[in-house]
Image (cartoon, rainbow, N blue to C red):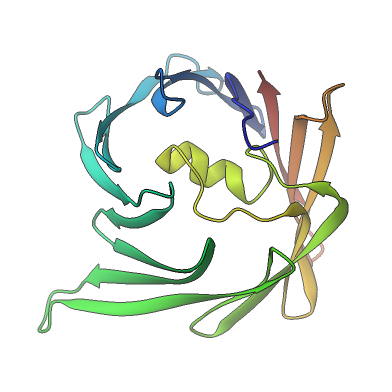
Amino acid sequence: MSDIRIAGIDISNSGNIQRYRIVYDVYGNVDSFVVTGGGFDTGYNGFNAFNYIGSSWTITDQNNYTFRVDGNTNGDIIGVLVTDTLSMIYNGSELSVINIKSPIPAYPYDSLSSIQYTWLNGDVSMFMYPGVTQSYDYDQSRGGQIGDAIRVQEFLTYGRPFIKTSHMPKDLNSGGQMTEQYLYQYDGSGRISQLQKIKVDHTGGNNDTTTYNYHY
């Protein structure tokens, strides 16, 4: 289901809501996101406009802030030029490392950290960054798609995801505990109609739930 195009996403959390309307160009690339707010966010309006140059593109928001995303001819993101610059290394189509270069005030004026990914059967089984190791579990009966819990935030940030798993992620684990759970509803065509992303509180507090409702 790699050709799914989401036309709109309503994201709600604790009474706040943001509505994304998504426009595509004739080549199937994201042309723009139009964002409006409701609930506590009533009155918010924003957008992200995409401008493509070869296999790369720029993203400009309503405040005229622009950053660049570099891609390759396979459609993979290989670099993001923002304050914390990201560069991606792939093994075939599987992301193996993200290098993050962050500015610091003293020489050498930037620091470098990395996130390393391990894959199994077409899925990210584990990813590691300094001091932290996390892993995903998957629903092996369903293929991953653009609205799933891994892809959707990358899609809303960059216009396409850089992690594309074969199966549907169902939870995230850290230190032997589930830290996020993902609950899905599907329409008659097998597309995600709703995602609930639940951040699990192990301290006795309330879990935090963000709900994504999709329109096609």
